[in-house]
Length: 331
Image 1 (cartoon, helix red, strand yellow):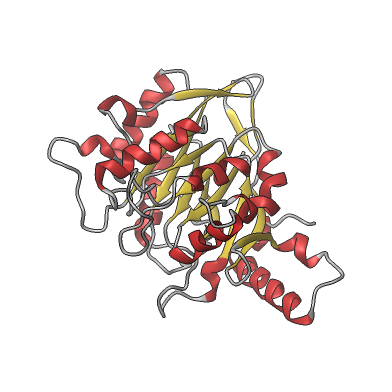
Image 2 (cartoon, helix red, strand yellow):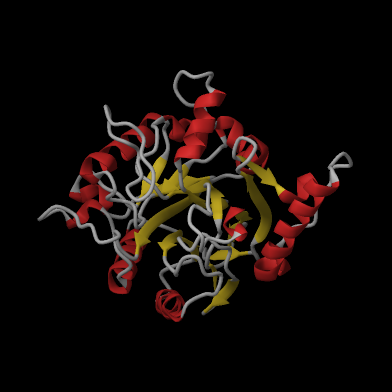
Protein backbone atom coordinates (compact mmCIF):
# COMPACT_ATOMS: atom_id res chain seq x y z
CA UNK A 1 0.00 0.00 0.00
CA UNK A 2 1.07 3.58 -0.61
CA UNK A 3 -0.14 6.62 1.33
CA UNK A 4 0.76 10.28 0.83
CA UNK A 5 0.12 13.75 2.19
CA UNK A 6 -2.32 16.58 1.57
CA UNK A 7 -3.38 17.58 -1.93
CA UNK A 8 -4.25 21.26 -1.48
CA UNK A 9 -4.92 23.14 -4.71
CA UNK A 10 -4.06 26.83 -4.69
CA UNK A 11 -4.69 29.09 -7.69
CA UNK A 12 -1.05 28.91 -8.77
CA UNK A 13 -1.35 25.12 -8.97
CA UNK A 14 -4.37 25.11 -11.24
CA UNK A 15 -2.83 27.89 -13.33
CA UNK A 16 0.10 25.58 -14.04
CA UNK A 17 -2.37 22.78 -14.80
CA UNK A 18 -4.10 25.09 -17.29
CA UNK A 19 -0.73 25.80 -18.91
CA UNK A 20 -0.08 22.04 -19.11
CA UNK A 21 -3.37 21.67 -20.98
CA UNK A 22 -2.49 24.37 -23.48
CA UNK A 23 -5.09 26.81 -22.19
CA UNK A 24 -8.14 24.56 -22.55
CA UNK A 25 -9.09 22.79 -19.35
CA UNK A 26 -6.55 21.52 -16.84
CA UNK A 27 -3.91 18.79 -16.87
CA UNK A 28 -2.50 17.86 -13.47
CA UNK A 29 -0.90 14.58 -14.59
CA UNK A 30 2.59 16.07 -15.21
CA UNK A 31 2.72 17.15 -11.58
CA UNK A 32 2.36 13.53 -10.43
CA UNK A 33 4.46 11.93 -13.18
CA UNK A 34 7.64 11.44 -11.15
CA UNK A 35 5.90 9.54 -8.34
CA UNK A 36 3.65 7.57 -10.70
CA UNK A 37 5.98 4.54 -10.98
CA UNK A 38 6.08 4.32 -7.19
CA UNK A 39 2.35 4.71 -6.57
CA UNK A 40 1.45 2.47 -9.49
CA UNK A 41 3.68 -0.33 -8.22
CA UNK A 42 1.55 -1.16 -5.17
CA UNK A 43 -1.71 -3.05 -4.71
CA UNK A 44 -3.48 -0.05 -3.17
CA UNK A 45 -2.61 3.64 -3.53
CA UNK A 46 -4.41 6.09 -1.23
CA UNK A 47 -4.28 9.87 -1.58
CA UNK A 48 -5.60 12.55 0.75
CA UNK A 49 -7.72 14.98 -1.26
CA UNK A 50 -8.03 17.81 1.25
CA UNK A 51 -10.18 20.10 -0.89
CA UNK A 52 -13.54 19.58 -2.58
CA UNK A 53 -14.09 19.75 -6.30
CA UNK A 54 -15.85 22.92 -7.45
CA UNK A 55 -19.50 22.18 -8.33
CA UNK A 56 -20.46 22.29 -12.02
CA UNK A 57 -20.71 25.85 -13.27
CA UNK A 58 -18.50 27.29 -10.52
CA UNK A 59 -15.01 28.59 -11.13
CA UNK A 60 -12.11 27.12 -9.11
CA UNK A 61 -11.39 28.94 -5.86
CA UNK A 62 -8.55 29.09 -3.37
CA UNK A 63 -8.12 30.03 0.30
CA UNK A 64 -10.21 30.34 2.41
CA UNK A 65 -12.92 28.36 0.59
CA UNK A 66 -11.25 25.93 -1.78
CA UNK A 67 -12.82 24.46 -4.89
CA UNK A 68 -10.52 22.52 -7.21
CA UNK A 69 -11.04 21.89 -10.94
CA UNK A 70 -12.68 18.54 -11.64
CA UNK A 71 -9.68 17.54 -13.77
CA UNK A 72 -7.63 17.24 -10.58
CA UNK A 73 -9.15 13.82 -9.97
CA UNK A 74 -8.01 12.61 -13.39
CA UNK A 75 -4.50 13.76 -12.48
CA UNK A 76 -4.62 11.89 -9.19
CA UNK A 77 -5.90 8.80 -10.97
CA UNK A 78 -3.11 9.03 -13.55
CA UNK A 79 -0.56 8.61 -10.76
CA UNK A 80 -1.97 5.21 -9.86
CA UNK A 81 -4.02 6.13 -6.81
CA UNK A 82 -6.99 3.82 -6.27
CA UNK A 83 -8.87 5.83 -3.65
CA UNK A 84 -8.72 8.99 -1.54
CA UNK A 85 -9.56 10.02 1.99
CA UNK A 86 -11.74 13.15 1.91
CA UNK A 87 -12.61 14.17 5.47
CA UNK A 88 -10.81 17.46 6.18
CA UNK A 89 -11.33 20.93 7.60
CA UNK A 90 -12.16 22.00 4.01
CA UNK A 91 -14.81 19.32 3.40
CA UNK A 92 -17.64 21.87 3.50
CA UNK A 93 -15.88 24.71 1.65
CA UNK A 94 -18.26 24.33 -1.31
CA UNK A 95 -21.24 23.15 0.73
CA UNK A 96 -22.96 19.87 0.04
CA UNK A 97 -22.74 20.60 -3.69
CA UNK A 98 -18.96 20.37 -3.34
CA UNK A 99 -19.22 17.02 -1.60
CA UNK A 100 -21.50 15.73 -4.36
CA UNK A 101 -19.12 17.02 -7.05
CA UNK A 102 -16.06 15.50 -5.37
CA UNK A 103 -17.52 12.04 -4.97
CA UNK A 104 -19.03 12.17 -8.45
CA UNK A 105 -15.62 12.97 -9.94
CA UNK A 106 -13.99 10.11 -8.02
CA UNK A 107 -16.76 7.74 -9.12
CA UNK A 108 -16.21 8.72 -12.76
CA UNK A 109 -12.57 7.68 -12.43
CA UNK A 110 -13.52 4.42 -10.73
CA UNK A 111 -11.80 5.51 -7.52
CA UNK A 112 -12.87 4.65 -4.00
CA UNK A 113 -13.35 7.27 -1.28
CA UNK A 114 -14.02 7.72 2.43
CA UNK A 115 -14.89 10.67 4.66
CA UNK A 116 -17.62 12.40 2.61
CA UNK A 117 -21.12 11.22 1.77
CA UNK A 118 -24.08 11.94 -0.51
CA UNK A 119 -26.42 9.72 1.51
CA UNK A 120 -26.52 8.50 5.13
CA UNK A 121 -25.50 5.03 3.96
CA UNK A 122 -22.44 6.29 2.09
CA UNK A 123 -20.67 7.48 5.26
CA UNK A 124 -21.02 4.02 6.80
CA UNK A 125 -17.98 1.69 6.69
CA UNK A 126 -17.48 -0.25 3.49
CA UNK A 127 -15.27 -3.22 2.76
CA UNK A 128 -13.42 -3.98 -0.45
CA UNK A 129 -10.98 -6.61 -1.65
CA UNK A 130 -7.33 -5.92 -2.45
CA UNK A 131 -5.17 -8.81 -3.64
CA UNK A 132 -7.29 -11.32 -1.75
CA UNK A 133 -7.51 -9.28 1.47
CA UNK A 134 -10.78 -7.75 2.67
CA UNK A 135 -10.08 -4.18 3.75
CA UNK A 136 -11.84 -1.13 5.17
CA UNK A 137 -10.66 2.48 4.84
CA UNK A 138 -12.14 5.08 7.19
CA UNK A 139 -11.58 8.87 7.16
CA UNK A 140 -12.20 11.56 9.82
CA UNK A 141 -11.43 15.23 10.52
CA UNK A 142 -11.13 17.49 13.57
CA UNK A 143 -13.67 19.99 12.18
CA UNK A 144 -14.77 22.20 9.27
CA UNK A 145 -13.23 25.62 9.96
CA UNK A 146 -16.37 26.89 11.63
CA UNK A 147 -18.73 25.65 8.92
CA UNK A 148 -21.36 23.05 9.64
CA UNK A 149 -23.37 20.45 7.81
CA UNK A 150 -27.01 21.30 6.99
CA UNK A 151 -29.51 20.51 9.71
CA UNK A 152 -30.20 16.80 9.79
CA UNK A 153 -27.22 16.01 7.53
CA UNK A 154 -24.37 15.44 10.00
CA UNK A 155 -23.65 12.30 7.99
CA UNK A 156 -22.14 14.43 5.18
CA UNK A 157 -18.66 13.93 6.67
CA UNK A 158 -17.09 12.37 9.75
CA UNK A 159 -15.47 13.91 12.83
CA UNK A 160 -12.61 12.67 15.05
CA UNK A 161 -14.83 11.09 17.71
CA UNK A 162 -12.97 8.07 19.15
CA UNK A 163 -16.15 6.22 20.11
CA UNK A 164 -17.55 6.67 16.63
CA UNK A 165 -14.28 5.65 14.96
CA UNK A 166 -13.95 2.48 17.05
CA UNK A 167 -17.61 1.66 16.44
CA UNK A 168 -17.11 2.09 12.69
CA UNK A 169 -14.04 -0.16 12.80
CA UNK A 170 -16.05 -2.81 14.65
CA UNK A 171 -18.77 -2.60 12.00
CA UNK A 172 -16.12 -3.09 9.34
CA UNK A 173 -14.82 -6.16 11.19
CA UNK A 174 -18.35 -7.57 11.34
CA UNK A 175 -18.57 -7.05 7.57
CA UNK A 176 -15.46 -9.19 7.13
CA UNK A 177 -12.65 -6.63 7.15
CA UNK A 178 -9.29 -8.29 7.82
CA UNK A 179 -7.39 -4.99 7.75
CA UNK A 180 -8.72 -1.60 8.87
CA UNK A 181 -6.94 1.64 7.91
CA UNK A 182 -7.95 4.97 9.44
CA UNK A 183 -7.06 8.31 7.81
CA UNK A 184 -6.94 11.09 10.43
CA UNK A 185 -7.06 14.82 9.65
CA UNK A 186 -5.57 16.05 12.91
CA UNK A 187 -2.73 17.98 14.55
CA UNK A 188 -1.93 21.69 14.42
CA UNK A 189 -0.67 23.56 11.38
CA UNK A 190 2.13 24.23 10.69
CA UNK A 191 3.70 22.12 13.46
CA UNK A 192 5.94 19.13 12.89
CA UNK A 193 5.55 18.23 16.57
CA UNK A 194 2.91 15.61 17.33
CA UNK A 195 0.38 17.21 19.69
CA UNK A 196 -0.84 15.74 22.96
CA UNK A 197 -4.31 15.51 21.43
CA UNK A 198 -2.97 13.41 18.56
CA UNK A 199 -1.17 11.11 20.97
CA UNK A 200 -4.22 10.70 23.18
CA UNK A 201 -6.46 9.86 20.23
CA UNK A 202 -3.90 7.50 18.72
CA UNK A 203 -3.57 5.67 22.03
CA UNK A 204 -7.33 5.28 22.44
CA UNK A 205 -7.88 4.08 18.89
CA UNK A 206 -5.03 1.59 18.83
CA UNK A 207 -5.92 0.21 22.27
CA UNK A 208 -9.29 -0.87 20.87
CA UNK A 209 -7.73 -3.71 18.88
CA UNK A 210 -10.00 -2.80 15.96
CA UNK A 211 -7.57 -0.68 13.92
CA UNK A 212 -4.48 -1.94 12.09
CA UNK A 213 -2.96 1.29 10.72
CA UNK A 214 -3.40 5.05 11.17
CA UNK A 215 -2.19 7.59 8.59
CA UNK A 216 -2.35 11.31 9.30
CA UNK A 217 -2.73 14.66 7.54
CA UNK A 218 -3.48 18.35 8.13
CA UNK A 219 -0.45 20.03 9.70
CA UNK A 220 1.24 20.37 6.26
CA UNK A 221 4.40 19.18 7.99
CA UNK A 222 5.96 15.74 8.12
CA UNK A 223 5.52 14.24 11.58
CA UNK A 224 6.90 11.21 13.37
CA UNK A 225 6.12 7.58 12.64
CA UNK A 226 5.67 5.45 15.76
CA UNK A 227 4.14 2.25 17.00
CA UNK A 228 1.35 2.88 19.49
CA UNK A 229 0.00 -0.20 21.27
CA UNK A 230 1.75 -2.24 18.59
CA UNK A 231 0.01 -0.40 15.73
CA UNK A 232 1.91 1.74 13.23
CA UNK A 233 0.86 5.39 13.33
CA UNK A 234 2.07 7.71 10.57
CA UNK A 235 1.21 10.97 12.32
CA UNK A 236 1.68 13.34 9.38
CA UNK A 237 2.80 13.00 5.76
CA UNK A 238 3.29 16.66 4.87
CA UNK A 239 2.01 18.05 1.58
CA UNK A 240 1.86 15.96 -1.55
CA UNK A 241 0.82 18.88 -3.79
CA UNK A 242 0.28 22.48 -2.70
CA UNK A 243 1.71 25.99 -2.95
CA UNK A 244 2.45 26.75 0.67
CA UNK A 245 3.78 28.94 2.17
CA UNK A 246 0.84 31.10 1.20
CA UNK A 247 1.18 33.08 4.42
CA UNK A 248 4.23 34.09 6.39
CA UNK A 249 3.97 31.41 9.05
CA UNK A 250 4.13 28.45 6.65
CA UNK A 251 7.80 27.41 6.47
CA UNK A 252 9.63 25.89 3.48
CA UNK A 253 9.08 22.44 5.01
CA UNK A 254 5.46 22.60 3.81
CA UNK A 255 6.82 21.76 0.36
CA UNK A 256 8.10 18.46 1.75
CA UNK A 257 6.03 15.31 1.66
CA UNK A 258 6.36 11.56 1.76
CA UNK A 259 4.99 8.54 -0.01
CA UNK A 260 4.79 5.89 2.70
CA UNK A 261 4.81 2.25 1.63
CA UNK A 262 3.16 -0.23 3.97
CA UNK A 263 3.60 -3.96 3.45
CA UNK A 264 1.09 -6.24 5.14
CA UNK A 265 0.50 -9.97 5.09
CA UNK A 266 -2.02 -12.15 6.84
CA UNK A 267 -0.53 -14.62 9.31
CA UNK A 268 -1.20 -18.11 7.99
CA UNK A 269 -1.97 -19.48 11.45
CA UNK A 270 -4.09 -16.72 12.97
CA UNK A 271 -5.34 -14.85 9.90
CA UNK A 272 -4.37 -11.60 11.59
CA UNK A 273 -2.44 -8.89 9.72
CA UNK A 274 1.29 -8.55 10.16
CA UNK A 275 2.51 -5.07 9.21
CA UNK A 276 6.15 -4.42 8.37
CA UNK A 277 7.89 -1.18 9.30
CA UNK A 278 6.87 1.66 6.97
CA UNK A 279 9.19 2.61 4.12
CA UNK A 280 9.37 6.32 3.35
CA UNK A 281 10.05 7.96 0.00
CA UNK A 282 10.64 11.72 0.49
CA UNK A 283 9.06 14.15 -1.97
CA UNK A 284 9.34 17.90 -2.62
CA UNK A 285 7.02 20.18 -4.60
CA UNK A 286 8.79 22.48 -7.07
CA UNK A 287 6.28 25.31 -6.97
CA UNK A 288 8.43 27.50 -9.24
CA UNK A 289 8.59 25.02 -12.11
CA UNK A 290 5.18 23.56 -12.77
CA UNK A 291 4.39 22.32 -9.26
CA UNK A 292 6.00 18.99 -10.03
CA UNK A 293 6.17 16.51 -7.16
CA UNK A 294 9.79 15.37 -7.15
CA UNK A 295 11.15 12.11 -5.73
CA UNK A 296 13.96 13.58 -3.64
CA UNK A 297 16.28 10.57 -3.59
CA UNK A 298 15.78 10.03 -7.31
CA UNK A 299 16.74 13.63 -7.95
CA UNK A 300 19.80 13.46 -5.71
CA UNK A 301 20.98 10.40 -7.65
CA UNK A 302 21.29 12.53 -10.79
CA UNK A 303 24.73 13.66 -11.92
CA UNK A 304 23.55 16.72 -13.86
CA UNK A 305 22.08 18.80 -11.00
CA UNK A 306 23.31 22.33 -10.54
CA UNK A 307 24.81 23.21 -7.17
CA UNK A 308 21.65 25.15 -6.32
CA UNK A 309 19.35 22.26 -7.22
CA UNK A 310 21.43 19.79 -5.22
CA UNK A 311 21.37 22.12 -2.22
CA UNK A 312 17.57 22.40 -2.44
CA UNK A 313 17.01 18.64 -2.49
CA UNK A 314 19.65 18.06 0.19
CA UNK A 315 17.96 20.53 2.49
CA UNK A 316 14.53 18.98 1.88
CA UNK A 317 15.95 15.55 2.69
CA UNK A 318 17.55 16.94 5.85
CA UNK A 319 14.21 18.33 7.04
CA UNK A 320 12.38 15.10 6.28
CA UNK A 321 15.10 12.99 7.90
CA UNK A 322 14.71 14.90 11.17
CA UNK A 323 11.20 13.44 11.46
CA UNK A 324 11.26 10.05 9.73
CA UNK A 325 14.91 9.37 8.94
CA UNK A 326 14.82 5.83 10.32
CA UNK A 327 12.23 4.85 7.70
CA UNK A 328 13.65 6.46 4.57
CA UNK A 329 14.38 3.92 1.89
CA UNK A 330 17.92 3.68 0.53
CA UNK A 331 17.89 4.54 -3.18
